[in-house]
Image 1 (cartoon, one colour):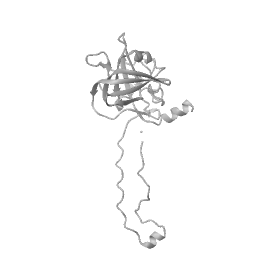
Image 2 (cartoon, helix red, strand yellow):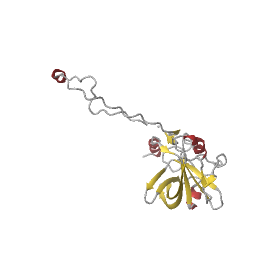
Image 3 (tube, helix red, strand yellow):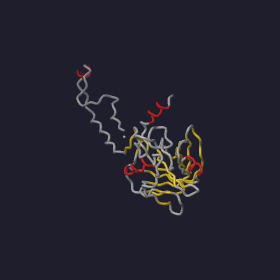
Image 4 (cartoon, helix red, strand yellow):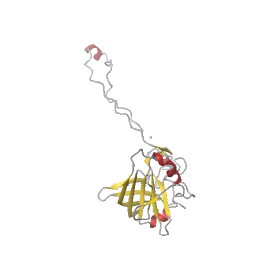
Length: 229
């Protein structure tokens, strides 16, 4: 299967965006926008982060012992876009603070920030999966998430409650049943309520229309995002 075809299909999968951050041995901060982040285990608490082998953050995260997953909200589009753009100082325009007692960069306004110790690094095709063991957690103000879907930034909207099926309709006269006509108000068997949906994994700050979130097969921010250069 062609990579383009696969990317097209994966662009239809809505993915929440996060900014992954760390600091190298020289004290320099690194970070990228990712759409490929998922929980892997509850006991112990583990999560996975996909990172492209061509990301500018690759070496920094390969050597890092810890990193922070900052979950973004709809108000963080600019941050997502910045951290998905190569060749810029990603930390210059946004206020980060250190995780208490460490030098790990943390986004103060993140919906949640998860501090992780690198438990494993697994090569997978042209990416590597960073396996993080949760060692700290900070939750912020709840809100709507920032998503990457159809190569654009999106967020969620509540799905209307399912329609209440009409009350059972009394049996129609035998004559009507034999004629094949359906009693008014009856619902054809097998009919279900319509389903719904939301971009470019959010043209996520990284580009939901330009770069793609690092560690993601779908086109979007994380897919092409790298680290600070």
